[in-house]
Image (cartoon, rainbow, N blue to C red; front, side, top):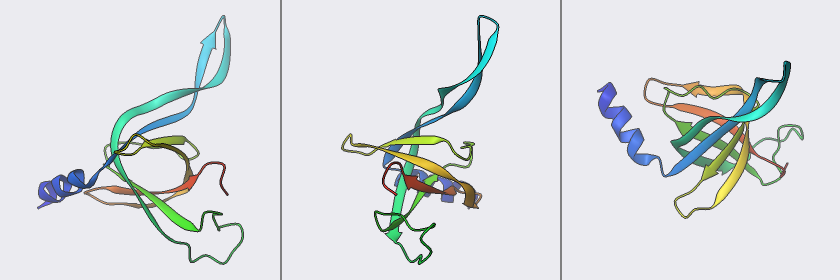
Length: 118
């Protein structure tokens, strides 16, 4: 049943994501943090629901609570940048919240925020 559920979820992924984060890089003996690609071409799906939050700090300006769904095999760090390309080739940039919504045996759900819109 577990493998069947994973297969069903995999069929629902209609987007691809690239995850970017900061990593230490040493150049000429100096260590600095620079943005680099952590994961690339990962199947995913975006879900958006009407925002029910009344707290101004939790409210997104676009009026939606957004979630990213993907396989549990990927570790997506808090605070990273997620570029999602939909089936039509449109790219949207999101940031990952620091609180995971849920991780199940078939998939994980990650709270995301549209970058620059809230």
